[in-house]
Image 1 (cartoon, one colour):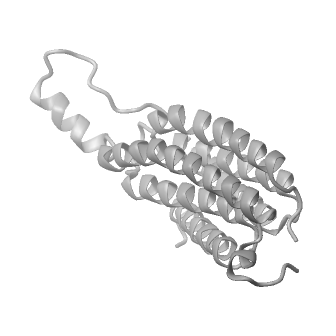
Image 2 (tube, chains in turn purple, green; image 1 turned 180 degrees about the horizontal axis):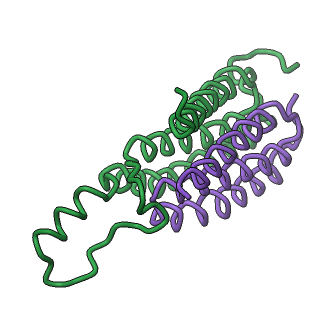
Length: 83
Length: 134
């Protein structure tokens, strides 16, 4: 059972690596924000498996909800594509 | 290393280290301030996840349930069982504080980036040093 949970955490860590790579490499800021939210979701899964459900309760509204919303507002006010 | 559990933990720590490296690349090399902002959030989240992973303790048998004190007043046996099976709560408290304070810092940085754009008409960092965009 615990091996299954740790396997889920490992898959989440690998997913976060892929999402971080795509977020850093993307020229379009909007897709970078979306990949950053995917990476935050993978970290939330890892927090839950590492027995920190209180962190998950704070981390999901902050890092999947508020921060992409603020960043999307910032991109809308400034420029979308990186030069 | 032949144990699959230690292999999984090694994979998780290597993934977190690779994330730290890639987000530092994004902070230092990428010219756009918004991309630096996104990379800074990823870097902060990775360090938080590192702290939580360092405070984790694997207890064989009682994995899906979280160790709590269910009875009041508690007996010394229950207290010793809790202390021997619970994870370290200090990194969790620090990370909880860091997430909330980080949100305020990111709001401030977003306001600064917006002011930069209104002054220089771009989010490229070289413009402030008199350089050329491109």
